Image 1 (cartoon, one colour):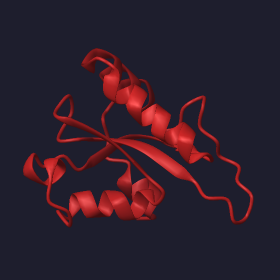
Image 2 (cartoon, helix red, strand yellow; image 1 turned 60 degrees about the vertical axis):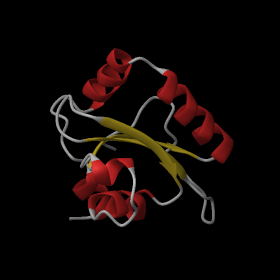
Image 3 (cartoon, rainbow, N blue to C red; image 1 turned 90 degrees about the vertical axis):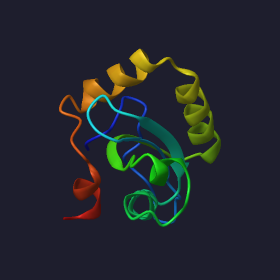
Image 4 (cartoon, helix red, strand yellow; image 1 turned 90 degrees about the horizontal axis):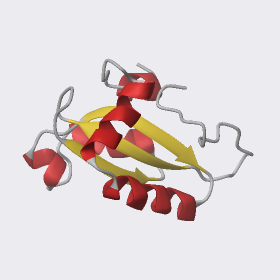
Length: 112
């Protein structure tokens, strides 16, 4: 799956809730935003469509360039916190490892 990482869980049981840590970018090597959600498609759609005022709307940060899936919300929140404390070079390296062209992964998760 695009955006996956070694720590990403891809097998879930029916009824299990998934949580996602995601990184959005304004463009390749542009402004970055890190967030967490339990509905990645809906949340990225909200960013793309300016449905919520804030940083991503102000700075046009709406390309999904990396995401990771977790079964436990505590793990997702901890990963988000850790990533937010990383220096920029580490974040860029993480993105480029799984998505060297910084392609917008939204279409691949939204089915079109």
